[in-house]
Image (cartoon, rainbow, N blue to C red; front, top):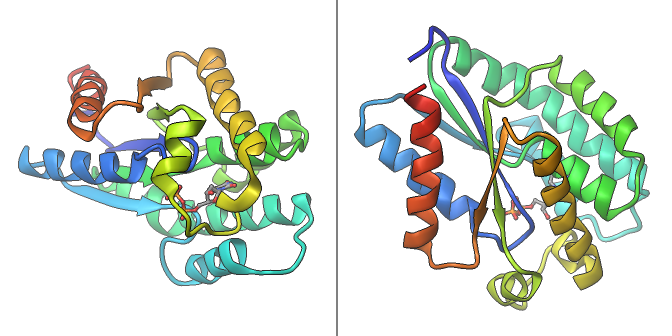
Length: 206
Ligand code: TYD
């Protein structure tokens, strides 16, 4: 293992199953003896949890740019307080959503300028990038079934929005094939996990 730890992000449209997969990866790596930190955006701890509440449950109108800045504010806090220190200590950080969510949702989904969002992401993270990002690609129909009837503010944004998000992720993967790997997440949990493990081991065995 390299001197510092690893920073791995899990991405995909709502209902893609990435949270289940990231927890399975946590268990898998801990069993192998790695020190793992599982975390998520928006809202890991403290201030971030308050921002999460606003983002997911505020019931008034939210301007797209305000939404973007709230996710970015959470990210700036998260990277400094949780991610950077853990990676520096040699741990493997598994993060459920990160910068690519902003590009896929606020950029491709809501139509905010993607180059500007990339710049803002970079500002929020002080340039720290994931070593690996796994995008769980799920068909919008299967995702909607998995989400079910109880939806938060983002999940209620409609099928067209979620199709744009999905295509956004595929576009990101095309642009950065070294960092971003795509897993077909239409399959069952076990099958998806087999594909995920191969990608994780490729990184760790480098
Ligand atoms: P969450 O309940 O964490 O959903 P999931 O389990 O799918 O990750 O809700 C996070 C929501 O916020 C999700 O709909 C994606 C959205 N989001 C953005 O729109 N932009 C972002 O930068 C991030 C981090 C999340």
